[in-house]
Length: 455
Image 1 (cartoon, one colour):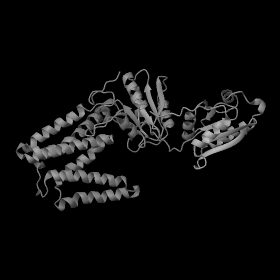
Image 2 (cartoon, helix red, strand yellow; image 1 turned 90 degrees about the vertical axis):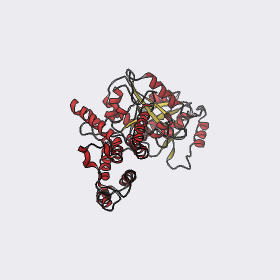
Image 3 (cartoon, rainbow, N blue to C red; image 1 turned 90 degrees about the horizontal axis):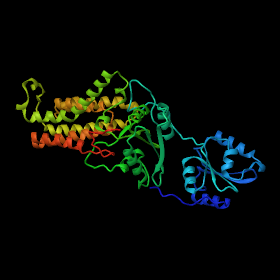
Image 4 (cartoon, rainbow, N blue to C red; image 1 turned 45 degrees about the vertical axis):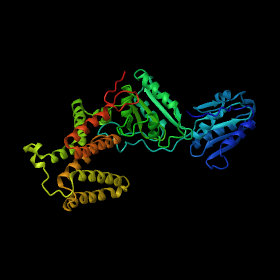
């Protein structure tokens, strides 16, 4: 819970300005601006952040204030905001906690001599990029827009798609230092009330200094996951159409300022492997895409451990599949080949992420040649092992969730190690453990990962 300053704005103009100058580093920070002017014969001070203010709007406001005469000055700040402030978003604040939060968030706060209150004028603008389609979550059809780092833009993208008065977007904050804005979005006539109450209580009771990693910090604070269970408990999306569809299904969407993605809950393993393309095609095509993606996802976990199991027990291999047997000499045990390739593939992926765009394609070709042909010829790896690991590496990209991809990778590694160690019994134990990881992985609502129900 964020500790709030209980100090109220007093009727003494000098005390209010002295307190603001004491708390805000006006002289030390070049971007915190204190602007003095005279309105209706009274001293006035503006406090705002340079770079967050629309210059055109501020010029028009100041021009309007300079034309106010002493006879036009109302008796209190509320009346002044109604009669003399020609702007849409205006609010009168009565305590310094709200004032500090608004100033540091980018709004302009105005103190006028003789008024027991502060006028908050929301004429801010944030640096923002365009709402282009996200690189990771692309769709062959549908809209080409995506979430950005500005929370107000993200809520507008969803509000544009759902013109229903039941769509509620509640704003709160978390982090004693960062005071990060958090928007909880839901359809009031469809949401699971128990889940919504649980989520809001958890956000309100957060004891964190800041959300330095934005959404990920919030997710970790909301639900303390067990370190040994890698399956994600939240679904993330950068597509506003996906978030809007989830809202209409009765789910809750959480937006965090400075994060270009939405956090969706409750979720299940079936939600994780869905993507926007499933809904932009005819029913039979969408079902086929879901089924094929599910089968390929299962294959990425069990394909290489099953191959290792049969290579350790060649007598179990049907004669029709005799062509899969390793033909060349095995210089390094198969289990070590698989583990080394798993590590090498992650190394190539990390290298690709940090490679300049103009060099990524030629370097990928060079890495493919070195890892493919030369590594087989040198005797480090067998061609069959390279083929099956190449399938696994490419198949991991058939499902859109990055965290789920690594969770499945860890399950595959566990199966490989247990199969190499205990043979058939190791493979069986590994399969049971994979099932247990799924069954006992509880979501925020407390339900099973394999069985999430909505109202």
